[in-house]
Image (tube, rainbow, N blue to C red; front, top):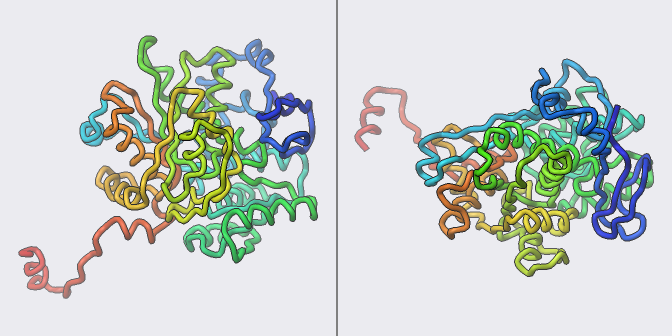
Length: 415
């Protein structure tokens, strides 16, 4: 059985108990938090009931999720989550950190963190018997929805900006989703999706709009708790979590996951959450720097398409994720983002621009004195580098072309 009680507005705190389909607060328009029955969970489960489960996917946390088991055994839907941690000794030494991990979300079925949200939304769609699930996406969220929906035969429609990377558009089409390219940016696709969902009664997955997206993304926090926090000494400094930020839903989802664990008494101390944005798409960071929750739209031009957003739809909760945990926001240049892709490659780690963003944010935090040698740190790489080959090629030198002869090879090697 699901532990779902209803919703609570993150702005005006109005509660909606057992509302079937609700996206935003009807009173103030604020983002909704899904409310769990913490007392019931505490009475029924202990941490070891979760950590002993023989299910190495996000579904091992089903007792902490607001949907019933969606089925789909033997399909990619059941394989999202439980992504690996890397801790290359040479990279730790380079960064000057005693404890460092990089969590590789590129290992998800469609190669990004967005599989977490899409898995839960598709499960919710099955629960409410939605005929169509629709979303706006620059690529990753759409690919995740298309892949997870295809896994169980759910119809999906994706609105994407025509400028989205071709590799990401290819994923949407291969999975069999109905893809509609919009002659505009992500925000215009987002607005059109909401209008269409109301007009045609489609179930809308839009990030930062559908409350269940954060419920999927919070599973990343559950894994960090299990993979790292449970093994930390009682007197250890709080874990520092670095994540790239676009619309704000991943960072707010991680915050929600850690808060769930704190409510249950299963987490010793709240991790510090650091959001990293491109200087060319930094609406949330600017609000944080101004000590404000007023999210003022920007004209986003960053090449990190996954975090290129004019008006972040989950900005308020994203600001709070850093502020309430003793974290911070950091902005980095697109040049630093590209450089970061090339820096991680020699350690066997291939990330898309949004994944590099979190890493170079950490590098900047170390150089500025925000992070010290004894701070335990985990960086979340949100997607695989194959998602954006154009950006990857900008991070490296072109491969040489030689004649197929030993003479040519020797001439090249002499250079």
